[in-house]
Image (cartoon, rainbow, N blue to C red; front, side, top):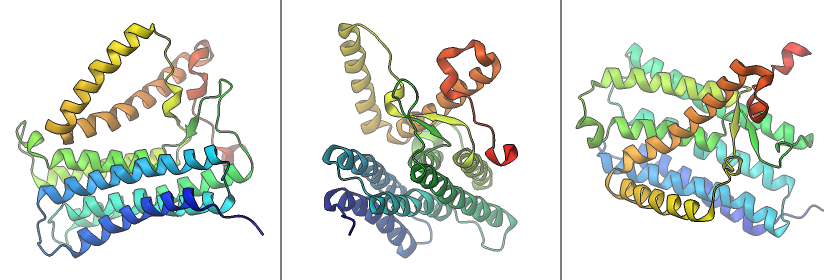
Length: 278
């Protein structure tokens, strides 16, 4: 009988509960137009779920408690928390008539986002079952396709920023224009989840610098980040996740342009579609 480890799966269950709570809260909210604070608190709770998603795998590896059940449970939880929940948050932020073509496109893009997230997880699980390594030759994790937690948080951070007072202080945007932007965002993010483009893990960014300089930069970055979180939360969250996407895209594009002349970026060369090579 295979063992099922409790602690990592409890953390996964907590992450799933966060996603389900957000969905139920948003769906059952009585007002037609929800206040900004509801969306902000939902995104914060989704961030907490993201941290839990990082911790459950780390806990399992530290305790030697990795199991096939844990892998499947984690994927199922992620498909709801980061695949379905962001789509629900985005759809609920609009007051577009249900019979309008724009709402149909918005719903279609939300479905594509969720579907691509599930496909991304299914492909990852198949690769894990076949013992395919996700580490490069330097022992750093490289993901094929955008990880679903980063995808979901990128979508909700963009939506939150567009409805925030911080953005409205810069410019006024009609709901139709915002809908078109979010439709494009969900289609693009959905594509990159199922694509063969490479995305780095946190430990991939390993830059050798002097200890004093590292401490100095870390201290400055922490001050700027804390200020942004407390005073410009929507913009800070948007900047962090979309900076990650832009950096990953840039590394892959540079690799494609330079080809084999860029040895340092060989890990970021997009893979060819295996179905075409079959």
